[in-house]
Amino acid sequence: MRLLFTQLRTILYPERLDACISVRHIRRKEERTTKTRKVYIPQLPTRYDKATNQRIPAIDANPAAQFGELVTIFGQDVNRSQALATLRAGQPRGVKIEADDYILAVGDVVLLALTIVHALQRNGRATLLRWDNETKTYRTEEIQNG
Image (cartoon, rainbow, N blue to C red; front, side, top):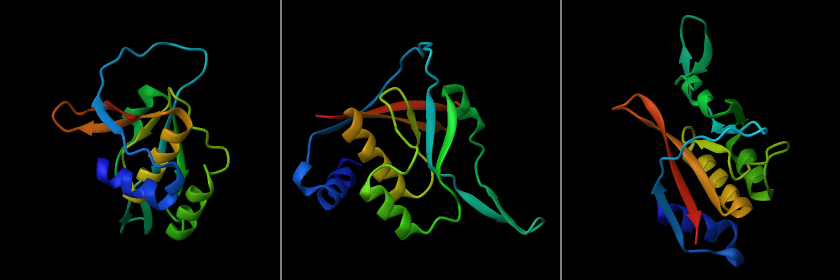
């Protein structure tokens, strides 16, 4: 994982390469604040449903709502090259990942990695929500710059 982030940073931001990225599992009590936390979903994975002839979400992201308001950054029909260009240019319009917000670790790996890189640049850290199959809950993992 560290290698992926380092390679992405080298490609996107060669002049701002911080090779010191650390990942750690955190258990912290969720403090209540006046600001509503957000859970950013880079791209919700979908599958084709033959009965309705539509693409429907492949996972239920509702359990992540306990961490904050769910915000999808890119829709299911986004052009991948267009999404990558948007992320390279900066955060998509209206998306400002704050230090106490979360990123749901689902969807396209490259979009997820670029979203994490932007959060690291903005805040010096990014907090991911990862699904734990044993406990059937999301757990938090923090990635820190330096």
